[in-house]
Length: 128
Length: 130
Image 1 (tube, rainbow over the protein chains, first blue to last red):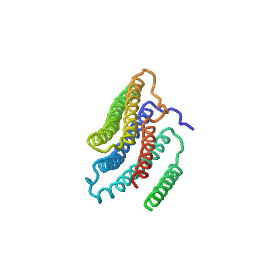
Image 2: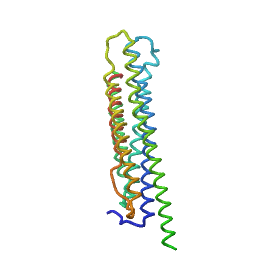
Image 3: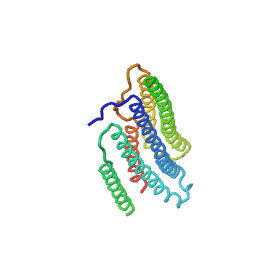
Image 4: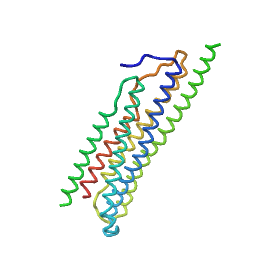
């Protein structure tokens, strides 16, 4: 159920709140992109370097790089998922709809846990 | 007297909205710049390494697809955010009263696309490296 229009100043304030929510999610996108970008750049660069110039990357770094990259991408995805849930909650509340983020948070965290279990399983399978 | 004060308040609120819309567009410019430059950068770095190497292994496909996806997402977000900004400015300055409109969130669309790209990258790295 959508709330009926109120005074002009209230409606304008709602629009500002929406813009603020938009900027908040944009900031989270930037932070997550930095984290995921670091992970991707590390993985791609070390992989390309190692394939084309074998032996030029120290074995310890070559072994550690994918784990660091996966961790950075995983943290970026986790933070972005939580930011999406928060954004949906804020915009629904602005529209005057009753919204509880608990169900969405539970779904998001459940999805991340399933994704983590899948990733851990893949690491174990590949390692053997 | 009261209606004049209300009018001034509404006009000042409109000015705050215009400033907020401007800040939102600037936030989008920064985000799109990050998306485009990162997408372009990762592809260029991997291509540069490929060109200088002696080995004939092609590792550029993954980074090219990833780079293209990020550049595409950044360009789409920039076009839509600029268009939404222009619409918002027109809506604020119209003579009729202002009513808050429910609409699709661009940030939500971009965030969901980025999650999909991130999951694909995670899976690709997982199966290629480990």
